[in-house]
Image 1 (cartoon, one colour):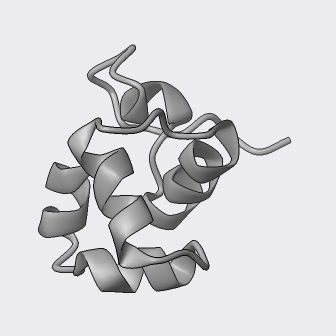
Image 2 (spheres, one colour):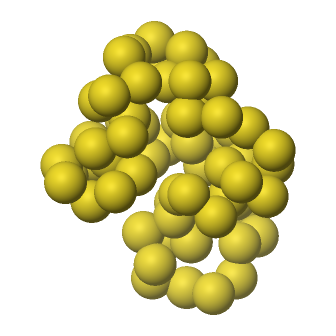
Image 3 (cartoon, helix red, strand yellow):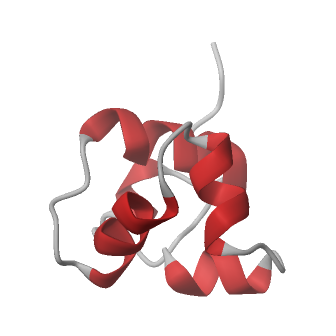
Length: 68
């Protein structure tokens, strides 16, 4: 998550605002101190235009699935 955020030139505060949460909560997700909820993974995948599998480290291909 950190690499995606930095590649997009976004701050933790910017992403926390997008997710409607405190920066400290997002920081814990990003650092792995807290498990990231599914709804956060889905919103981040939409925000960064990547697949949830890519965010979860299940694939090296960031391409999101095609919409139906």
